[in-house]
Amino acid sequence: MPEVIFSGPAGRIEGRYHPAKKRRAPIALILHPHPQFGGTMNNQIVYNLYYAFLNRGFSVLRFNFRGVGRSQGNFDHGSGELSDAASALDWAQALNPDARACWIAGVSFGAWIGMQLLMRRPEVEGFISVAPPANRFDFSFLAPCPSSGLFVHGDQDRVAPMKDVQTLIEKLKTQKGIVIDQAVIPGANHFFENRTDELLVEVNSYLDKRLGPIVPEEAPAALPAPGEDAA
Image (cartoon, rainbow, N blue to C red):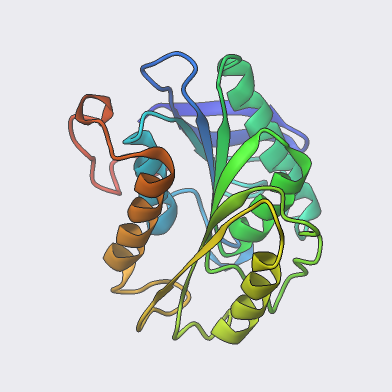
């Protein structure tokens, strides 16, 4: 797994990047959970989302927010992390100036950051928002949400209760010009313990619907074990 280091607003940012094989391939940026609660780019869901897009021929980047792993800086309660994400997308776009589109996927805190970045970057045409903490962070900036996407959450989530996520989704579904899809994973908690496979089924089904099925020759020859590229 190619390790990369690039400059961010608080110093060095550590990431993992895999370029697409074809020119003009879209870009996917994957954002990890809360840095102060153990969130890193090697989170299992982040890792699997990374490969979900890689298998579809995307150029894919995941990275550690400031203060995580070898990324420099200190936790900044979202403001600095949004700047990190913008810098990461800038870096990926500089390497892929002909990229035809971009997607953002985020998990928990990363979903909140990703949706904020979505509002600032009109080139983003789709998103995956996993376990968005609608009760803990303000999502009112989605007025309106500029892109269609998928929300995935568990019905046993005690960190971001289903009722709060449902309220957010219902609000977004009233907007014209976009389509908001929703997948609820029965029995899943905030971390999708023992439910990661079900989560990935929903994500891949949605990506198939939006992007078409995986083309075998674009997929990696083998999927490494999650620990092989750990920092």
